[in-house]
Image (cartoon, rainbow, N blue to C red):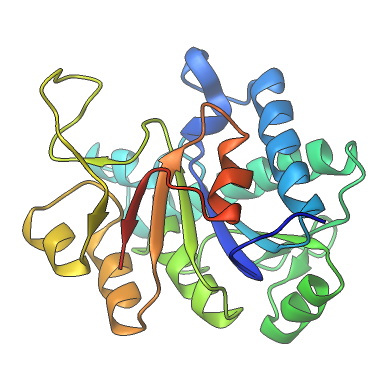
Length: 237
């Protein structure tokens, strides 16, 4: 068992991360690589909860902007996160990682209902828990769900896996002069309007002193590096 800085973490994965270069749907090779990264992290002994988005399948906000009822479109987005959760569960169990999916929307045939104490018992038994369907409420993003679940399961940090190696003052994929931050405060993220998590999630983390570590998922080995406490990404605290 390797040395780790954390006992329990909440890993936030975007749905877009599962799509790879194709931009939509689930890329089998990408999800297998992510699974290997999570499996390697589990081997260190850390307890891992995962919140996964659904943007690779359906984005409720985008549909709402095009005239669909916001609540209906958000519920559709929650169902998309369930599809991703099942795909990730399959990838992890093929790597012999004991996994449970808990859904904020009840669907007994495919997932357990989200029950905080049950989730914590799973984590104590070294089962990786994937939290699907966001918070179960429209108008709340999976970023907010990640902040909420992290607090509920008493995680020590939210690890937000992104397409870039930290937080920048502007999009580094579009601007070559973008400047990376090694560390930020919650207030700086809000005041600078940095695209880390939505303001509700950041405020919730600030009110409950929950650190957020943003790092690059293109190399799934970064999950283990982050758990070991290596200097990667951007820390918000």
